[in-house]
Length: 116
Picture 1: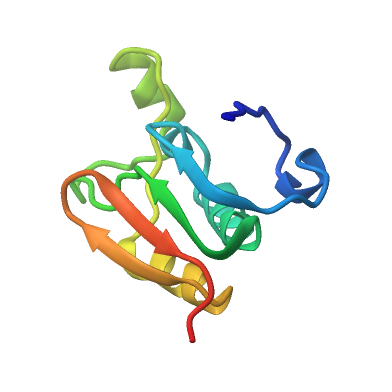
Picture 2: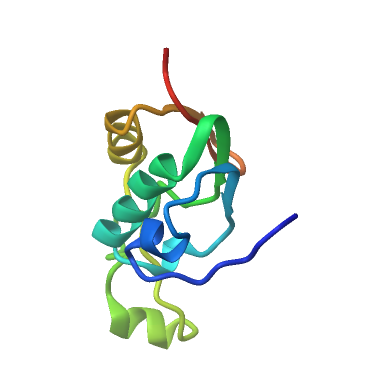
């Protein structure tokens, strides 16, 4: 069965402490500020069963001449606020939670639970 969940930053409370074979997010984390992105990424690892996988699509690079957190510029460019977290920071957060990371430059991150 597949469930679609809407949660607060306390993801584990939203799922009642359950663990999952797959956690997936596509083009949603980029609309959260970086500290919230990393909080969710860490909790995605916590929500995986041993051997579980997460497929995360999140931008990790932007034109460095732009401020990705400039709400006014985002509104002028089309109304959507965009943020990013550098790939190295994402990898560090995930690995600190005991998961391994496979970065794919097209498509996002693959996260596996439980490094041995």
